[in-house]
Image (cartoon, rainbow, N blue to C red; front, top):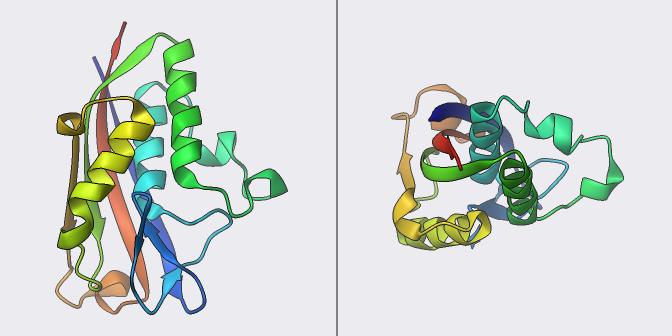
Amino acid sequence: MRIGHGYDVHKLVEGRKLILGGVDVPFEKGLLGHSDADVLTHALMDSLLGAAALGDIGHLFPDNDDAYLGADSLELLKKVCAVLDEKGYRISNTDCTVIAQRPKLAPYILKMRENLASAMGVDVDCVSVKATTEEHLGFTGEGLGIAAHAVSLIEQK
């Protein structure tokens, strides 16, 4: 068994969609980034890559490569899972936390879990997604950005 941790953060800006776990969450701002800036999926990918000691998403999908400009992070997650499969790993489970003062994410959590599980080729019961605030403290609490943490367990096949 191998465990990996991932962390990502993106700035909230006007004129962008807010995509979290592949869900288009209605909100007046979205996350700034080279791809769709899906902070949840990015943290998850980093946790999977970290568990296999395969670096991070910046190594696989550089933000200076136009091939990934506006990329769908769920498609990138599928590629990460294919790399894990090639290296002889299978995903056991993952636990993710999104940190955002607003919007409230509870109505979208199940769809996020379903999207992530589908992209990873695992049962939805293997994917946990939670959301929390930081009680108006720090950049997430001030509504300047959204962060996410993920922990994943993988096993040799």
